[in-house]
Amino acid sequence: ETLLTQSPGTLSLSPGERATLSCRASQTIAASYLAWYQQKPGQSPTLLIYGTSTRASDIPDRFSGSGSGTDFTLTISRLEPEDFAVYYCHHYGDSQLPFGGGTKVEI
Amino acid sequence: QVQLVQSGAEVKKPGASVKLSCKVSGGDFSKYFIHWVRQAPGQGLEWMGWINAGIGNTRYSQKFQGRASITRDASATTVYVEMSSLRGDDTAVFFCARGGQGLGRPFFNWGQGSLVSVSS
Picture: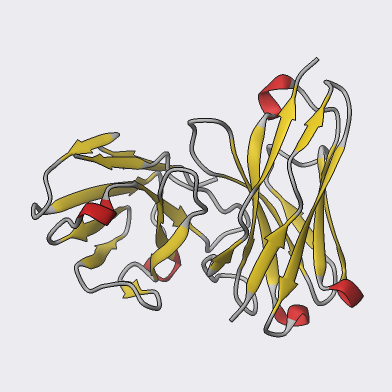
């Protein structure tokens, strides 16, 4: 089973700054099957990015995804107040569908 | 617009079972894979398993194999998950989520979550 490790665990930034979140897989995975979700306190997760770099519906273009092989990145170009949340990467291309442990983006 | 509406909170004693529901509306129910995801308090997301809503076959995470059972009622466009032999560390919010038409698709829509509290 592929394990996903996210870093850092917590990212402390200010509005307007750039956020770079990392997701590392324990083995090579196809870029077609890597997604990112955002979860705010008390809410369900929301799909942000799938296929490594495709934004889901209504997701603003300050969110972007990149990567290949075992290393994937979610970038938020300029943090807005509503972007402070927990972000999870997710591999959905295998018989087991693991999530990473999450990165909290806080002010 | 596909919507997933889950059943309400449950309180159970250790050793008991719980069955949660997820009503799917909008779209073509029979074409979707519906997943269940668990989230313990303050913790991350754990994928539990999926059901092919069309034909009813299932697959489970190795962690939940044998203790979780996912079923569906196609006439009611509703998916269920039943967890048995509950323990205190099963206290969590359980989410259902809609995958695409076929495997290898992300989770496009999520239910609002159902809290299960396990305590003696």
